[in-house]
Structure formats: structure tokens, C-alpha cells
Amino acid sequence: MLAGVLLGLLGSLMGLAQPLAAKHVMDDMGRGQVAAGPVVALSALVVAGGVLAGLGHYVLDRSAEAVVCAARRRLTDRLLRLRVPVVERTEPGDLIARATSDTALLRQSAPQAVSAAVTGTLITVATVVMMGLLDAVLLGVTLAVIAFVGVVVAVVSPHIGRATRHTQESVGRIGAALERALGAFRTLKASGAEQREAAVLHRAAEHARRTGVRAAAWEAVSATVSAVVVQICFLVVLGVGGTRVTSGAIGVSTLVAFLLYLFALAPRIGQLVDGVGQFQIGSAAAARIREVEELEVEDVGAPGVAAPPGQEPSPATVTFHEVRFAYRPGLPDVHRRVSFTVPGCGLTAFVGPSGAGKTTAFSLIERFYEPDAGRVSLDGKDVREWPLAELRANIGYVEQDSPVLAGTLRDNLTLGVGEATADQLRRVLRLARLEGVADRLPQGLDTHVGHRGCRLSGGERQRVAIARALLRRPRLLLLDEATSQLDAANEAALRDTVADAARTTTVLVVAHRLSTVTTADRIVVMEAGCVRAVGTHAQLLAGDSLYRELATTQLLHR
Image (cartoon, rainbow, N blue to C red):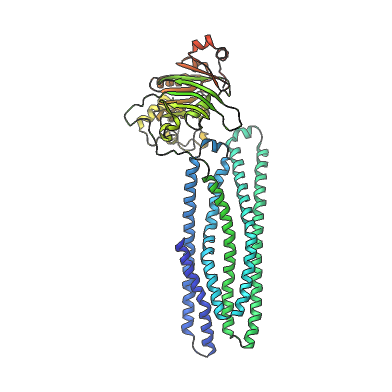
């Protein structure tokens, strides 16, 4: 940016010398002399000034692209490291708008603001100095105009900044509303809610239009006042200067040179006015970006591994001790003094009514959230004391909705793992019963699965999520209703896979099917945020009325 400013400044300085060269041409012509030298010098100044100014403009724009790229890289890196509670209370569409449209405003405003701040100011000062050398009286008229324009800009520019910020907030709301609609696209269509959602988007767009018009109006006021005042200044200088020429106080060439400087000063004043406006626009965008940079993030650190290559990971132990947790202050506790221990190896199932806190237990183990009281331990060590990347490298996690990302099947399987060998991929495909799916896809593992895996069935997406977790070779495998969308045959096959994994890995599963629960080594029954009972299927049938009620329905409540 400094290089761009300097090039532009050199070009402007050459433009500043042009009125003096023109004065020499006129003086030589007035004395009847040949003005070849001054004409050549004037021509050289015009060409060199134009080239340098154009080059400076290019360098500034190139630098602005670098600024935007750096801002987007820093911002997207921070967005991906935000803590889960922060993301859940923030609209994703608004965060996307901050990384796209707000940073685009930086691209638009950075060159103009920097150029105006440096080049515009220096050249304006230099022009005023040159005017003063030509005639102090005419300079006084010009300075009065500059002072008036400065007052107008000082009054108007804060309004431009506020209006721009409101516009960008409206754009963020459009993004949030659109992300909301597209995230439940089939539900929206099945409900016949297209017009209702379109009305929400239209209202957001209309609000953005109104705030944008308000910003444009203030910019127009600033530009119009400065342009009109400069024109009035030209007429006054012409009248006063003509009078001084008539009285013999100054020569015609001096008046012409002064007017040329005035012509050169007018766009500089406009540049300063625009620069102040662009600075306000850029400041509004930067403020929204800074808000994201102030959000709480996780200290993930370097990627971790569950075990060195070639070495089988040992199963982990999990302990909850008097854990209390609420999602936000003021909300009821989801966990109330929850305590249980899961030894290494084996299958542990969590059952209970909806809202009992089963999925929350998995979120606390993964440190998506941290307990308000009590302790969650992995291998006897509080999970808060583990380096976050190392902790999660030891855990394979399959969520309830088994999300699949846009990209290829291979991309989804190796997510977070990096490169995987063909044998490793074949193994997890076989374990997750995905071999047939991969074989029927046109490009096999390199087939794109569509937005959120829309080209796969619900059961296939679930199997992809299970295969992805198994590829990590975890010491602890968390399955949150991982077979809910599978047919009976695939569920039975995957139940065998889970049983095989439980021989060498600690497996925790939130279950809603009796067939999954009966094979578990231990079952944790949860109700209303408490551990009600722990035991085997037979023990709980005999000793716990809630478990007996759930088991007799054959389909355990989620």
C-alpha cells in the first residue's frame, strides 16, 4: 500500500507542476518567444504523471486484494475454532456474511481511504502552498471553501458509518434467513411454506435496501455540497481574479495558473470527501469483523493422534463425578450430580426418556461444553486438562443426524484423518457395510455426494459417519443413536461391527432399540438429568421399573 501511495503521489506531484509549466508557456508566448521547451516539458509531465498515477492505482488495488485475503483467512480460521455454545447462539448466515460481504467492503474502501488519507491530503496541502505563492488574496477565498467542505464532511460522515453498519447487519439477516430455509429445504417444500419463507427474505432485503438508500443519501449530500461549493469557489476566484488582473495586481498568466490549480484542487477535495466516506464504510465492516475476532474460540493446537502408526490404541476409561451442567445461565440443569464409570473395553448403552441428558454426556466428553460443577475424566484425567486436539483424536463420534459434507465420499471418510491407505479404506467400508454403496457410485470413492450428502440415503449417511469414526482408530467410540435410520439387515450387521469394536475399544452408545441394549455389557439408565440405575439388561429388568417400562415397548424413547 505504501508503494501504491508513493507512486500515486509522484504522479500527482507531476500533475502539480503542470500549471507552472503552462504559466511559462504563456509567458514565453506573451514575449513572442518560441515555447518549444516548456511545451515538451509539459507534455512529458502529463504522460509521466498519468502512467505513475495508473500504476499506483493498480498497486493499491492489488494490495487491497491482499488485505481482504488476509482478513478472510484470519476470519474463517477463527470461525472454525469458535466454541460450540458460541456458534449455537449465533446465526450461521450472519457469520458467513461477515466473512464475505463485510470483507468485500474492505476491498472496496481500503484503496480509496488510504489514497485519500495520504495522497489526497499531501497534494491538497501542496496545491494550497503553490496557490499561496501565486496570490494570497485568491488563496484566502479558496481556504474558506475548503473549511466549509470540512465542516460538512465532519457532520455527515458519522451518519454514513452508522447507515453502512445497519446495511451490513441487514445483509447478515438475509444470510441467516436463507441458511435457515435451505437447511430445511425439503421440510419447507413439503409444508408448502415457500411463500412464507420468501416473505421473510423479502422483508430482510427491503430493510437492507432502506438502510442502503439511507447511506447513499448521506454520501450524496456530502458529494453534492462539496461539488457545489467548489463551483461557487471557481466563480468567486474568477471574479476576484479578473478584478485583480484589471487593477494590475497580478498578470493574466498568474490567474490562469491559479485557476488550473483550482481545477486540480477540486477533484482532490472530492477525493478527500469520498475517502472519508469510504473510511466510514470500511470502519463499519471492520467493526463487524472485529466482533467475530472477539468471540470465544477453542485452543485446538496441533493435530493429535490416538496411537502411533502401527500401534493399536488402548481402550479408554470414562468417569463422570458429580457433574452438573446447564446449557446457559438461567436454564434448568440438564445434568444434576451425574456420576458413573465406564471401564476400558466393552459396550455401554445409555437409555432414558427424551431430555434425560444422554446426548449431553457425549458433548461433555468431547468438551463441546464444560460442566458447571463436577468432573468428567478420560483415563482418570480431567478432560479439561487434556490438549483439545489430543483428546478428540482419541475419540470417534457419530452424531444423531450423521452429517455428511459436500465433496466426495473419500473426502467424508478421511475427514480429519488426512491420507488413508487403500487397505484402511477397504476395512472401514467392509465394517460399515458400505462396500456395495461405493461400488455402485459412478466414480467410486471419488463420487461427489452432494450438499449435505443429498445423493445418499439416510441409512447410507449414517454408515458413512460410522466408517469415518472407525477410520480414526479411536480409543473411545461414541455412537449417538447411530443405527436409527438403518433397516433391520444393516442394523444387525452394524451391531456385529459395534460388538467387534467393543472387544478392543470402549464403546458408548445412546440407544433407542432394544436389540442394541440387550447385548451391552452395562446399561446406564438416565432420567431428568440423573443416573437412575446402572446394570445389565437382566439386572435392570428385575430391579428398575423405568427400564422395564422402556424395554417392554420394544422401542426405547429418544
